[in-house]
Length: 151
Image (tube, rainbow, N blue to C red; front, side):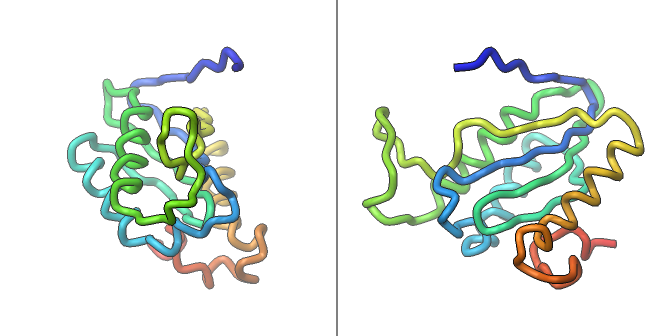
């Protein structure tokens, strides 16, 4: 296991990539309402601003800005994953780890602390273009699970 250290900045903005354990599953788009509800519930208890978000069948990218004085994005992700996992029904033959947990999510997530407005815009553009990159659509406006529609 690597000695990965997270970079926590109170009130910071972060780009995240979060993946399903089995990248061949399509749980996120199949259960988009459950995912949205999970985010809403966590956001109510642990506020954050959603700057951009895209949900693909097996992974998602987003940018959050945390409230001033707060830097704990990890608890938010833990609770979102937990809420979603409790609500989704997957087959009994799904992957189970050595702790006898169903593995819906990859244990970790990738984060990048956004440094400035240019860095933020680059990552917003990456988020919105991602469904095109993966071949799901030919135009960013065609993907329904994207914050591109919020503009």
